[in-house]
Image 1 (cartoon, rainbow, N blue to C red):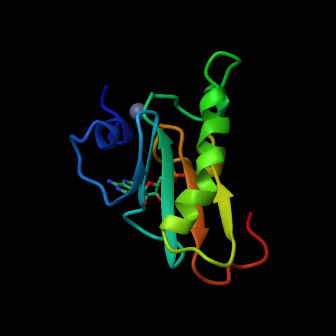
Image 2 (cartoon, rainbow, N blue to C red):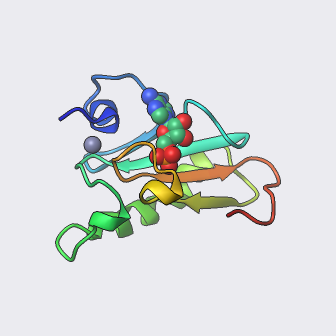
Image 3 (spheres, helix red, strand yellow):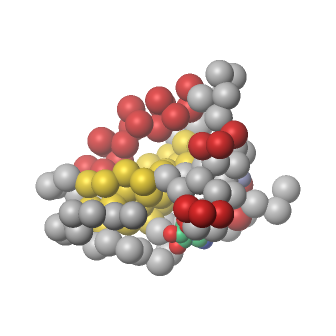
Length: 112
Ligand code: AMP
Ligand code: ZN
């Protein structure tokens, strides 16, 4: 499958890794939108939140269990925002489920 995040997950494309285990990978966003901007992905291909089901959704809880330690490891000390974009109206550009962790500075109060 021609999915850039699958290729990052299996090492075909290099990334600046923050955390990795058998199920998930966290790496620095190539085009950061905050002082610290990390992406967390499942290694299995799920297109977006829109493709979550009873069968595959446990990976989301697993990712969120790991996010506090990933944020700390990335150097975030004073809070962060977790975002996921789903589909065209949300400007999802990579069709492999990912969670943005944004922090390292004061973020704007409102996003839309
Ligand atoms: P989204 O717009 O929510 O789909 O987010 C996709 C994110 O992936 C963007 O913030 C991109 O900067 C980031 N991105 C795309 N390619 C790479 C890459 N090779 N390494 C790291 N981040 C990437
Ligand atoms: Zn993929």
